Amino acid sequence: MAKIPRNFRLLEELEKGEKGIGDGSCSYGLDDGDDIMMSSWNGTIIGPGHTVHENRIYSLKISCGPSYPTTPPDISFLSRINLPCVNALNGKVDPSKLGILGNWRNTNTMENILVELRKEMASPTNRKLPQPPEGSTY
Image (cartoon, rainbow, N blue to C red; front, side, top):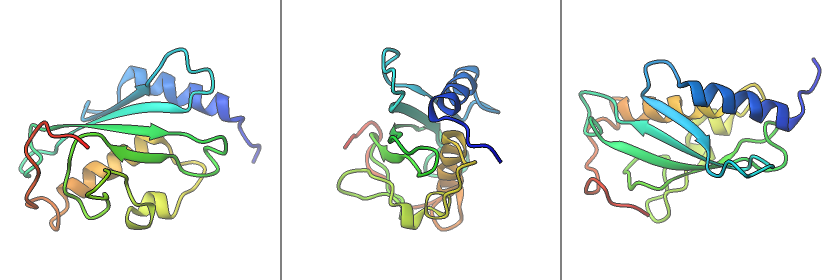
């Protein structure tokens, strides 16, 4: 299979992100439209219903390094959240604690990561975890 150049792949993801994902519970886009390297992105996850996250809007920072999509992006929550895969001090998602990042494949996308994080919020283990006050940030 031919390797798709990084910028082509990121342009494809940008186009998809701008159109919106599925039911609108997750979205992402470039942090700065003038970022020609397309490295700095932002993401949003709307907390899943019937959980402590319901009606909360979580903001994330996504950093795609020069070797993306061969290596996963760095993901950090800007909104405070209590999840086992998120560092409580700085909001950084620990790749070893989130399957999609720990078992990264170059076919995975930012959309896949956001959807996976939302599934983590809704999992039986995490759905009732006490959360920081709404609106608090790292």
